[in-house]
Length: 256
Image 1: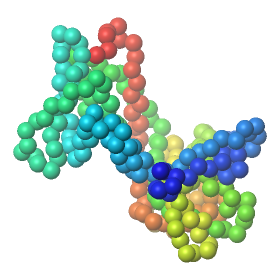
Image 2 (image 1 turned 180 degrees about the vertical axis):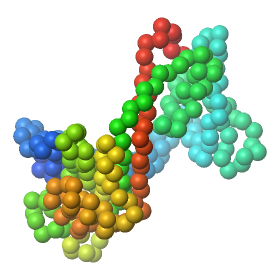
Image 3 (image 1 turned 120 degrees about the vertical axis):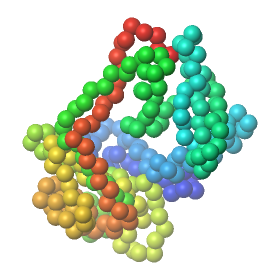
Image 4 (image 1 turned 30 degrees about the vertical axis):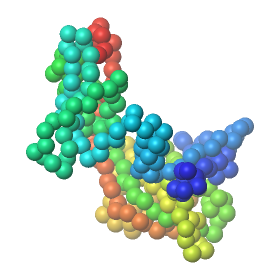
């Protein structure tokens, strides 16, 4: 369904990609072809929800527009039994309980789970703060032909930073096929990110300034491809001097 109904597509890492790290082309000597499946995460999540609910019927009830507010715990058994949540559209609604065999926290860096584990079990998840000036600017674009088959045939293009010699990189990844009457369009939407370390950030005030930054800091093929790309979204920056990497260590305690 992702391929036939929602514009997803698989790409050959051997023939349709250009993956570079430290100036080395990583995929040129692949002895076996590998497929890279591309779809945007929101379509993937929606389709997975539909398929899970169709296959498992009454076993799954999907809760949307809800906020988890606390854990349901049994401190004597050192276990988490579920969560309490409230519907977002009704602030005055009562707390509702959900029980489950396992709980997955997908809220990322804004998670409250670490605080709740400490409050309920005195379980401290250590964190380490790494100061390396990580940041990126990202946007969605439609890719057009540049007239160079060696570039037009490469739909996945990635280059990673190589500190301290090169602190900047870029990735250009397809997320879905689109229908278009423009013969110069490659018929794909891309997610594009210009990323860096050591605080050598790309600009996000205009696409013209992004192109100038790319021209000065990245290999020429990135400028060629991006110059022929139509921007279809805002330019979204993410800059943090501190990148929190959370990890779990052996605490000589039973994990709940």
